[in-house]
Image (cartoon, rainbow, N blue to C red; front, side):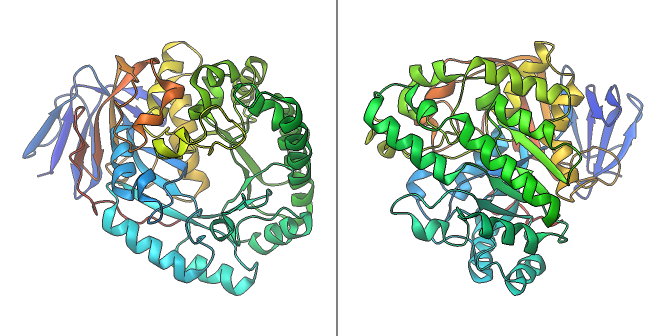
Length: 457
């Protein structure tokens, strides 16, 4: 006797979609069965017309909890994850104070364990760059490490202490001390010196209310220069380097030029694949993200980089802010906080790319799930629906539609989702299961707070 059978639909397997039934026992996939041959179970889900995907693994997520509850909480944002078909997420170490000591890491893990609706991993900031701190984080189960090559934003030093390393010698030290851990070292890569240079120029010459000003004040050369330096350093350092949120054709060219020189991977995000600076100008400061959303030519280059394997991951960089915080800088891109909700729209957006013929379903899923599960040491437990894997499942309607409207999302940041307001994506998340239990039924979140599990490599 199994606990659950899912019948009547297609299942995305490593080889591609197949017409099979699934059985679930004790929260794991028990078997794959020819249609109609699954063993009896007390619960059966009829998935006719739907496709079962392994639950999405988002490797780049922010909620900053337990600080700033007005922006969103672990409960609110992991509920949003469930609504978006995301069953595992990795929380970045920007918190107040920064997650740069083992003690803060323990506190955050306990807080997430009490409140998370889906499974979670936690990043650590390398802090004092000592082997002793690194080893404690490894013992605690840190999923990966994160650094910024930019300085801490004004007034937010405690959130970035041990995370922001604008000097190249410290960046090299971070790569070197984290090399050999087997954990990815994820870097927000922009040149601190060039950012300061261009911001000074922009404040003197650009209209702060224009959506085009953000891209001009933080141009692609800031990103590409920082990425080139990191990749050059990593030839010597030998870390498992991962470049976060690539935005530009210039950076794609740098990634290609360094191919094969060290162990590195790169990601981009839906906001860079499905929006341009024209959309930012329309949406205003609510669509400000760092690094900036750029031109149509940059977007085209990112899709080409996905096609040729230069970029192998797509992540949300979900970063909710309170409406009051965004409104306080209405009309001023220079002072507005950077961030936008994305955890509910990533899967529908990628399904839309499948519908448009840009990607196969397997390619889309690899980008937002399977590749991340493998890179972070969670495969085959996550990222597949083979026997023995966690029964984390996103049932999607490929022919359905997701329409995004302000106020219509589950995220606490639903009132600042201006970037996606009015967008219609071909594809809909009909149900999300975590360990074989429904946490989103297509209309409301049914998962319980504290139901998510802490995952380690």
